[in-house]
Amino acid sequence: MPTKRVVIVGGGVSAKHCAEVVLKQGKDKVDVTVIQANRFVEWSLASATAFVDPSCHPRFLSTDCTKFEAKGATYTYATAEGVDMEKKQVRLSNGAAPETFDALVVATGFALPLFYPRLGVSVHERIAEV
Image (cartoon, rainbow, N blue to C red; front, side):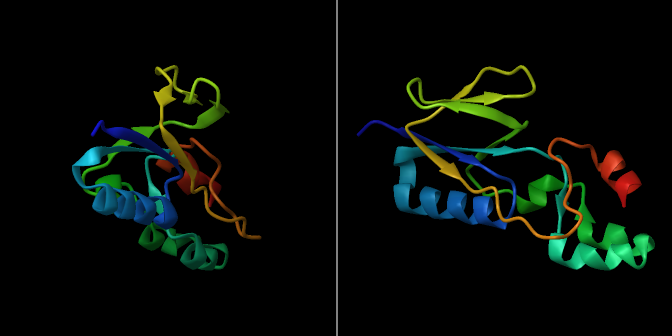
């Protein structure tokens, strides 16, 4: 059976869990790529306390994304600029070749009335924002 390419857009817990489930269910029949906009992981719910005390922000921020990657998935760090459903491609912001897919999952999370990081910012820019 041919390998299916699954692309997941998102970098949070939902994207990671989705990648883990797809890899487990698909066994050796899927290639999973996760497109993640930022090269850091932030626990957004807990980071709300940084409004009161910005010095605690580093406790809710990790610059080592590998700790949060689904084993077996490929990670591309770029912002998804758009999707061409006819070509089955996700266009990326970093000038890289588009990611092609057989199946696309959008796992970009949810909007909170918190101070959420802008897409594609560096960890240094994020720390300066907080």
